[in-house]
Length: 119
Image 1 (spheres, rainbow, N blue to C red):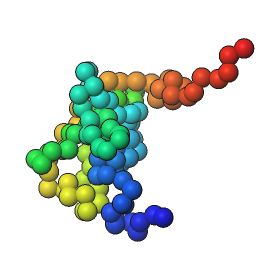
Image 2 (cartoon, rainbow, N blue to C red):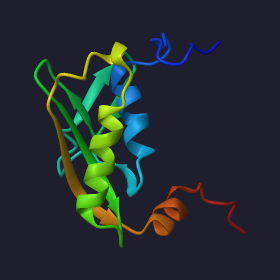
Image 3 (cartoon, one colour):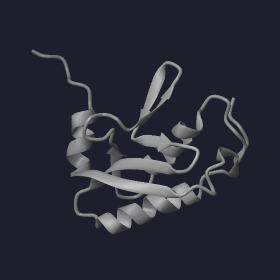
Image 4 (spheres, one colour):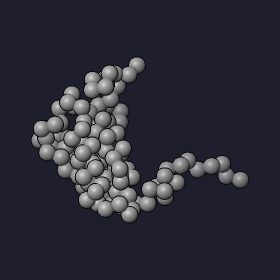
């Protein structure tokens, strides 16, 4: 069952909504958990890597696409965050985008594919 647009989704946490919006932004290859894996939001039974939400701010850590200007990617992420539904309660919080790495999107997609059967 899906919710109406703009309505809270009982199946997803706010951090997951942020994650989905950020990874859909042009120039974002993936989220990044930081150099020591410290950036994330812990939820019951799962973790949203690369998204940190506090009472005061929102912080996202991304891997930007090779060949795309970092400023353009950062602006796209900021736009995605500004367009989050009002029910998230994040509209009045400052947002910070940290570009942790740069990667070729084609290589990243290839690396994400499961390994085939060995012969």
